[in-house]
Length: 276
Ligand SMILES: Nc1ncnc2c1ncn2[C@@H]1O[C@H](COP(=O)(O)OP(=O)(O)OP(=O)(O)O)[C@@H](O)[C@H]1O
Ligand SMILES: [Mg+2]
Image (cartoon, rainbow, N blue to C red; front, side):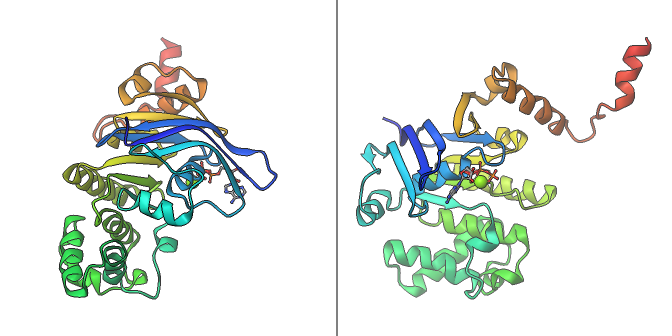
């Protein structure tokens, strides 16, 4: 039995056509699965379905099991108990996921209070330790800052601290670094990689960027138009992409993965080949 088992998951909103169809996923304890696909392919809908955070008018069918417990068809109260401390999520946009009126430290502490009823003093210590773990060398200052006083990369690390402070078994990351510039993105991904490894947590990592996913994940599922069209180990996806959409992604990602210092192919190379 896997930690997360999604089978035949179909989600439609209101009377509309399904946004995702027949999605099947497996994530084992400690495993990292990347879900990749273009904008509108259904990645966020899949993540929110697993988290139980879809809009009221969403109609779900199929099966979502965490540690063998079925989540579809349960009441909110039962879901809260079944998901409990097992799931954490890092959202696509850090600014909208944080409360602008609350200091960062209190927001991280709130997670502990909700899940464990931790007392304020004990929570503060653990919050500072967690902020240090996500790479802040001045955790006191960050804890006392409001989100608007932090940079985008710092906010994303605060969200990472919020998602991990409960030691969840599975962290769902929905494009956690898309809004950041490339160097900050690399820092945040490095932090995420380390804290996930330290915690031994599994991860469902959603992105439209295959180069990013391949740095973090051992396995990849490719989504197109609401369906999973291909899946495999990261190495196999790179070496033998089957679906035409995946082949296009791999060709683009290979260019992004050229090591710093390597010479990038330039248009002139192609013409040089023709002239010879
Ligand atoms: N609450 C909703 N009501 C109606 N349709 C929705 C709702 N949420 C999502 N959709 C539709 O579901 C489809 C998939 O959206 P989703 O947000 O999962 O895409 P995505 O793969 O995460 O894209 P992006 O890379 O841009 O974040 C889209 O066509 C979208 O319009
Ligand atoms: Mg999305």
